[in-house]
Image (tube, rainbow, N blue to C red; front, side):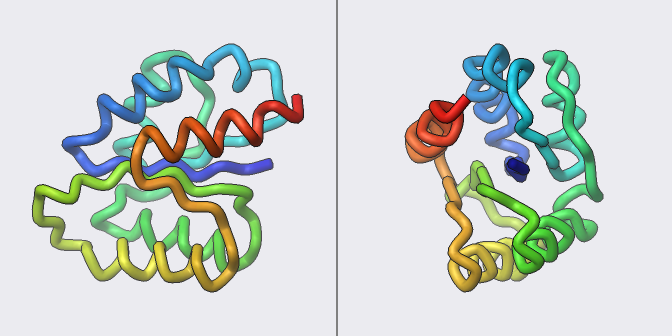
Length: 124
């Protein structure tokens, strides 16, 4: 099982907080995490192992979308900041579209991520 993690700058703390609540489940499972560069760096600081791709604005969102299109991902958690402008918004929209096309669960806020993550991790 591979889960992709992305968070806009204003939501990186939310992502770290969210994952810290599942740290034990992550350490005792076969769940692989992949994250965009800066988000991944924040996640590593709390001791969670994560594969990093490029930062979102320089291609990381597209790399995650490619993984989704190739059915390499079980779920995408993308904490978006809807109140801020993002120069790479076309990449964000493309990622969301790819998740819809390939039926990959996509959580864009902590409440949705919590429900989905609890369901996925209940299998372990």
